[in-house]
Image (cartoon, rainbow, N blue to C red; front, top):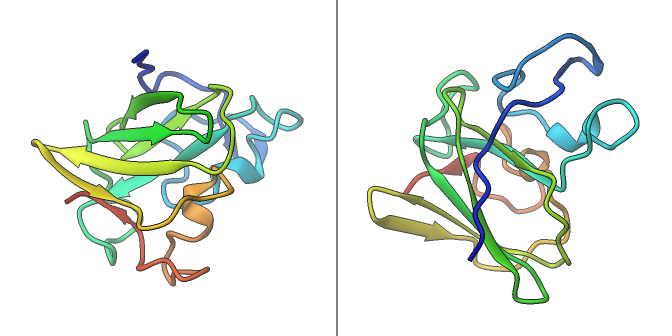
Length: 135
């Protein structure tokens, strides 16, 4: 298994220039990181302590494991804001798990979109239970 760690990114504030890898936790990263307005990410989001956590309470060093439809597996690690992202080429749908301290929480169904915060938000959308949370 190859691994990619979350790293520095061209970040945008409201899709305007200027930002950092810790910007806008809890928002749908792929709205701006689409390859036109900002560097394209294929999967991105924010990990929180609980599904109802506030937007500024992300979890550092959680591991997000991703397995695509072709069997390709890799993981990304959250930064100090709880943000994670990757530009790895993936084949949808994806199976996604969050791991912290040896415990894992996995999505019950595969997903067809890599902007995790689109559904895992406050309030949640698309049947999500709330924010992406550690086990």
